[in-house]
Length: 348
Image (cartoon, rainbow, N blue to C red; front, side, top):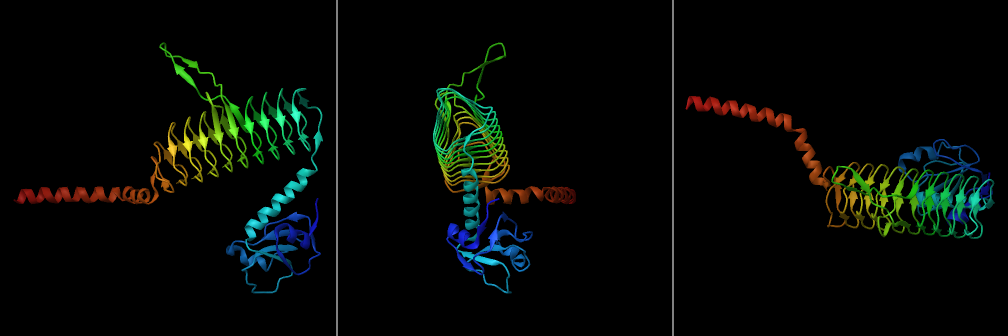
């Protein structure tokens, strides 16, 4: 395991040490469970009580944190403890990955493939003809990369990933285990006899820089042209992106979301889990979609928060839910009024 002292950690995250700067840690731990030799952080006030009881050797805290009791751990103060801890985890991961260089056997690398410097190719990986890998690319075991695929620098491809022919992957991309990039789009033309003729899928998938794709996510190749995942997109596990779809810059999408063909999602969109998008629609920049929303038509107004099926303004949808909840009581009152009207009519 890699070991760091408090002073080294502070340099990595541009923090200020309070306490013993020479104390060393080799592990990360949650503040409520951390032991000696581990580093933790406090960002959420909900966990402040554990600041005084944790056994962690080093704790990263906010500059604004006021101490109510004496603390035995060494503290590192930073403007944003959560962001600093994320930075530290990233640097630790990079240092571990830096030791992974070389080609394990057995693996297959086509003679025409071009590999950059500091690459790692895991056992049973297969790299096809005319593939181009940039520098510092990590290809874990059992990965398949098809013909003519282009991959940039600082890319990590986890075990079991399949990247079909002609796809393009940018720089600083992470693709997690089991994901499929560039499989055929769901294109079938109905015939007069009721059967379906497959429409060849001749396009590709383009994944731009700084994208992360979760495990078992599938991104289909375009029928013609490209299915595009723009810069900075973060996709969760178990997401389906259909042919010719486009996901805009810095959009985040949670698990089990399905995006139908030719749908265009804008920039900085936030999508909850199990959201469904109909095909051939557009989603405005900054849209927020609550979990299990069903988006059946184009959203033109940016920066809205929508929920429900079909997706509607969040406040309006919540008001509608209240009305639906009250329907049994309203029905009862209507029936009572009908009886009262009948009685008054008879008396009249």
